[in-house]
Amino acid sequence: MAAASVRIQILKANASDILTDLDLSNDELSYLLDLALEVKRAPREFAQSLAGKSIALLFEKPSLRTRLTFELAIKQLGGDSVFCEGPIGGREPLKDVARNLDRWVNGIVARVFSHATVEELARWSAVPVVNALCDGYHPCQALADVLTIRQRFGDLRGLKLAFIGDGNNVAHSLMLTAVRLGMNFALGCPEGFGPNPEVLAQAEGLSATSGASLEVTHNAARALDGAHAVYTDVWASMGQEQESARRTAAFRPYQVNAGLFGLARPDAVFMHCLPARRGEEVTDAVMESPRSVVFDQAENRLHAQKALLLMML
Ligand code: CP
Ligand code: NVA
Image 1 (cartoon, rainbow, N blue to C red):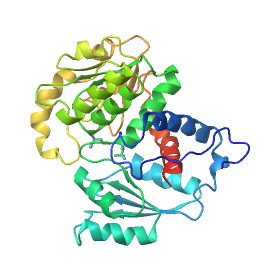
Image 2 (cartoon, protein in one colour; image 1 turned 90 degrees about the vertical axis):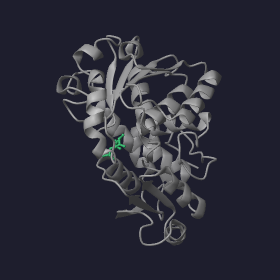
Image 3 (cartoon, protein in one colour; image 1 turned 180 degrees about the vertical axis):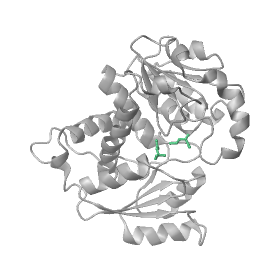
Image 4 (cartoon, protein in one colour; image 1 turned 180 degrees about the horizontal axis):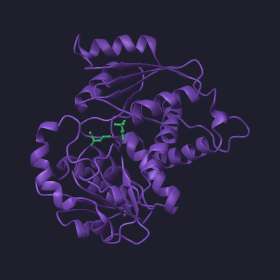
């Protein structure tokens, strides 16, 4: 039970792990956003919420935001974290790694190359596993992003989010999260760089239930029409560096510059998960424009992940 001055009760998630954006129910997702705002409003009220709990952060890829916001979130909630960088399961099977960790810690946050790695960790670990980015999803990012849009526009239902660029992990997570919340979602991407068909089919099913519209198009202008939020991400994700030249050629017309950004609503915000490559997927002018909310997104990683940890541990 939360302290008296906290305006919200801490409810636990039903799922034991967060491997994709679908592991929280729609109600839990909406509740998480409320909890994140309360944690942001009154951080000290939660200062002991994870007292006595330890969390392992296992990162196979570099990170600024995810690592630091998880470390700070855990510390500010009264818990402890340990960090381990490098290939997970290189020296011993993942099932052994998972069964070592669950003897020491109360939760695992893992950034991995392959989604199968977080699935295997979750399968063998007795403690919750949270996906901190894999090749298919970036669920923690999407939580912070919809929180950011809600802070800017209020009720999410009926807003339009346009993602311009690669149908990648961030696009998948945003697509799944947005349509469940009743947000219209459009992905404008070059041919051959669309979302994973299985993820798209899942998102289509969710949008049919929520009434949100969902569109994948190669026409960026069409995706941007009526958009409240314009989102982009790098053209080559971590692990795809060798494809950079081919991708740059294909993605060039999809750069979010003043011209493309101007096709969205006049009050549209610009969003990016960061790190950004100025001059590639976005221009410096758009990144630095008054309608850029990229640092609000970065801040909200902290609040959203605190809420997630409170619900999972
Ligand atoms: N957006 C994001 O996940 O940033 P990092 O790669 O720095 O963690
Ligand atoms: N799509 C990017 C996101 C980085 C936060 C990547 O996977 O590298």
